[in-house]
Length: 230
Image (cartoon, rainbow, N blue to C red; front, top):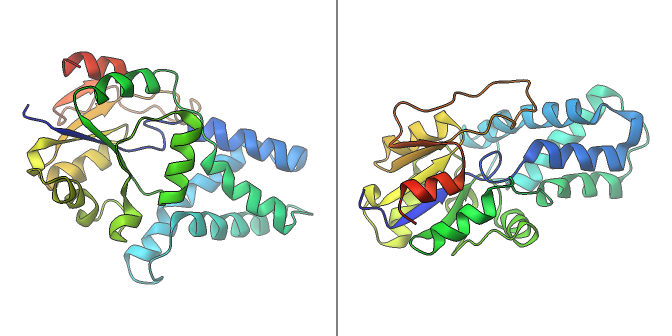
């Protein structure tokens, strides 16, 4: 493949959102909630909240603000008592404090020797910068939803990578642990690589072992580096 840049989904592909959010929920809410179940329910509001922006029900709204709105709705729905404003603000920052999967930094470091690397995430820029600094993710630049004020899978998000990097779409490889993300990228002419992350949902769901439509399917980012000769 004549690939010059790799664009990465972040939540679930590069970092372990479930363990990170669960840990912060446990720290801040204690035994008032089941922390993993709360994290799953919060994540369950992720796509519907972005759909409200995508359909025009809401104006452009960054992910931090959508996370806060979803959090308030979830706390009210569950009847969780005594969650003050500072605690709610701190909970939203849980998404800024996610740990990378054990293979992620080593794989990205190898890949960066040969390719331009960027996140292509629905996270807002401040969130992605905080995650990268905490986790040591060696991005060359930050791309994604806030740059174009569209959420994936809107085509504008995928189109922004070759446009901003002065590349042809087929010179960009989209890397994700989610088949739907890769399908949307392929529709815009990007090459695709699937990363199998069996623990993303804590064993509650079993993601496919491979994406038969992707150019590559791997079980880790070092394996991706191997396959790409990095």
